[in-house]
Structure formats: C-alpha cells, structure tokens
Image (cartoon, rainbow over all chains, first blue to last red; front, side, top):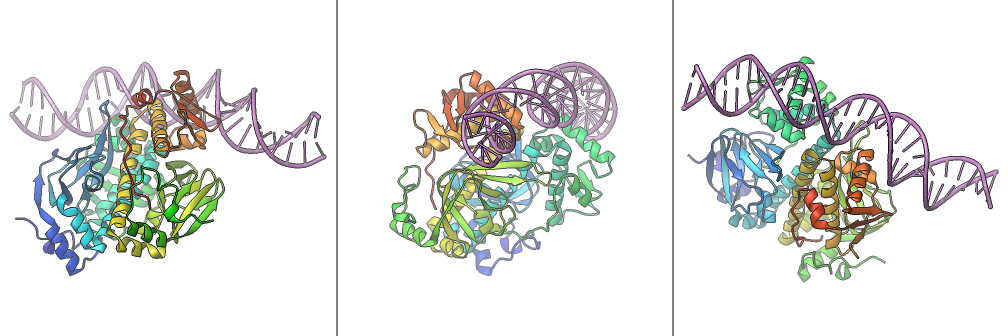
Length: 242
Length: 242
DNA sequence: CGGCGTGTTGAATTTGCTCAACTCAGGTGG
DNA sequence: CCACCTGAGTTGAGCAAATTCAACACGCCG
C-alpha cells in the first residue's frame, strides 16, 4: 500500500515544482517506506539525532520547542508536502520536536542515504537548500509577528498564512478549510495565552472576519483580514517536493 | 588591499571548518571583491533581489525586518564569518534587510556565479545548506525566547548568545567583549520596548550579573546568567566559512 | 452518570508600554 | 569659549494589553 513517487498525489498539485524523470527516479530510490501515525504521535524529538527524514504526504502536524519550565513554542504547522528532519540530517540534532495533529502518512527516507541523494543531483541539493532558505524566511516573518504585532494582528496573520497554505494545496472549499489544531496551538505559536487568544478570536468573529468552529476555518474577507494583520497578500510560489 | 582567501584571517580561527585546497581555490575564485562600509550603511534591502552575496570579514551588523507601521524586528546580529544574502540567491528576494552597525569589510560574491559554485563542489553546497539549517535552528530558538520568555530571561538569553558567539571568535578579553549595538537594537530583537529593556538591563546590573556600558559587555557569571535565561550552555560547534 | 478535553467568559492582577522629563557626552557654530 | 543641539541612556508615573485565576458550558466517551 506504499505510494509510488510516480503516482504521488501531491506531485500533481501545481504548487509543486515539476521534476525530471531522472529526479523522480532518484527520489523514488531515496524513499525507503511509509509511516502512518495517529493523532498525537511524536515523530521527532528536539535534540534527537534521528536516523530518518520524512515528507508529510497526508495529514497535519506541528513543530514545537519546549522550555524547562514547561512552556511550549509552536514553531510552525506542518502541511502535506513539508519536509521534516532536515536539521537532524545536517546538524546532527533537531532544534524542535515534531508531532502529528491528525492522522498522518509520511514518506520515510534514511539518513544514511541522505548525503548520496544530496550529492547525486545538484537540482535536488538545490531544492533542499531552497526549502531550508524558505523556512528561514518564514521564521523571520513569524518572529516579526510574535515580536511586533499585537494580539489581533498576530492572530489575523496566523490565520491568513494558514489559509493561504491550505488554499495552495486545494484544501479550501466554499471558503472553508479543515483546521484540526486547538486554540492552544495557535496561542503557543504566537506567544499568547490561551484565554487571550480565545478572546481575540471572538473579536474577529464579532467583526465578521473569521469563523473557526468545529475544526473548520472560514475566512469571509481574506484581504480585509490581511489588512488587520498588516500583511500584504502575495501569490503562492511553486516549491520543490522531496 | 583585498584579502586573499588563502590568507583569510578568519579561517585561522578554529571554530571555522578546515577546507581542502580545492575548496579553498573554488571559494577564492568565487570571491569577486571586497566592500568596506561605514556604520549605518544598508547592505541589503528586504524584498530586494540583490545581485551579490557577502561574507562578513570584519565588523558587526544587523538583520532586521520592518513593518508598515514602522516597527522593526531585529532578526539576528551579524558577526564576522556570517554569510549574507543567501535568501536572495535561493528565493529571489531577501526576507529581511541587512545593515552595518560598525565599520565593516565584506567579501563580495556574484550571484551569477552562485549556482556554479554550488554545483561544482558538493562539499560547499552542503556547507551552504548547513548554514541555512543552522540559521533556521537559531531562529527557532529566538522565536521561543520572544514568544515564551519574560523580559529578564529574554535579555539574559540574548546576552549569553551574543557573548558565546563573540567568545568563539576570540573577541572576549578579560571577560569583556565589544558590543557596538544600542539598547534599542536588543529591544527590537526581543520584541520589548526600549524603556523596559533599559530597566531590565538595570536589574541584571543590580544583580551583579552583567555590566554593559561604553560599548563593552562584561558578564560576571555566564553560567548564572544562562540560568536566569533558562538556557543550557553548549559547546560551540565548528562551522563552515564561505 | 460522571469525568475529561475544549472552548468561553468575567474579574483581578501584572507585565510591559507610553509619555515625559532629565542627564551626560560629543559635536557644531556663533 | 560658551551656547546650543543631538543621540543615547536613565528614571518615574500612569496606562493598557495580556496574563492568571476561576467558573461554567458543551460534547464525547468510558
């Protein structure tokens, strides 16, 4: 029941870069299997030197870091197509943990093959670097949000970003998307308390900008919400898929 | 007066990875010149698609992002050896601006040569990815600080991190290092107001942990300060130099 | 039915922000 | 030589945003 890269359902999506037959074949050989996990399953642990890398094929998850006092910072949300575990492969240890929020299916790659994969195709090596640079870019944005925006802007920013990612993946239907995360997750992503996040969501709801209930997020006016977030909407970029 | 990579003063420092003769030669060819800038000079602009990349050879600077309302988030401080402009090369635009704080000397590379450089040496390609992954790692840490730590911990964290970087570069003498930044820079890095940052620094001074005056930072007890920051001290890693 | 997880809301508290004033050093120009 | 300005740092007072504490609603599941 393992998905062959040749018939990978993600690759069909136009937000993912075209691959040459050769690249596809190399990626196919790199893939060592598949992993299906239940909600709540830890996939990688902060500080661990994991022997495997993953690409999210289905489902959603979170990257997060925990402090000694127990507080948690959500670094990013994981969507299908995301590459997981690069830090462990490059640096020998993960800077954050990764956990499944929904049921997930992951393509599995062996770290022992990683260097060969990287070396054997300049294009794929470039893609990996591209992904790292993109993540760095995004984290700079997030940092700016957490550091500078007030709660209303920050929550708006997060919802717009999430919505855009989902939209690019075709997860939005009738202006609605599935959002399996908890309010606590958003709170931890933005450095806000749960209560304040809840009240901020209520304000956005009162303003008729956003409804998020029963695991479904509906944004009435994306442009206006982006305005609240002081965020300019940009077209989604084509990105590589490993 | 351009420094030849062969006699690069940074490379002598043991925190930088050894290079093979071949790698060194390729890097030497990649380098197209040198740039000397005065304090306050903008080096790269957010959103720009710069034709050049740099490595900081001497001096210090800042990476930062500005929001429409004028608020500024400092993303990171730039020290000698830092690679600047990777995002523009990989993604076509910088996610943040870069500015010199002190007088700086930068090694200049042409973006048009970047892909060749990347392709012609797997080791160097790997190094570039390593740097991107390291930056991502660090930004996750920073995000956690800004999102979760209170002002006292956050300021302690920042000073410890800065001090460690400087120490690795041999900039610490008698427990003191030059710190050319303003309190406003630290404030913007941590998402705190200038006034509150100032008062927090005063608290650390009263506790006899840190003295920062006249552009010199002195940390009396690094371990204790790291304790306030809820940060575990780790040995500095050897890193590549481009 | 009771317990748990999640979401919601009000009240009290606190952390950090804004405003404002003042010091001090360095530079400039009459 | 002194008056004046500017930038950086410092400090107090009052205020606002966000936190903590607390209680309750609701659906789900054992």
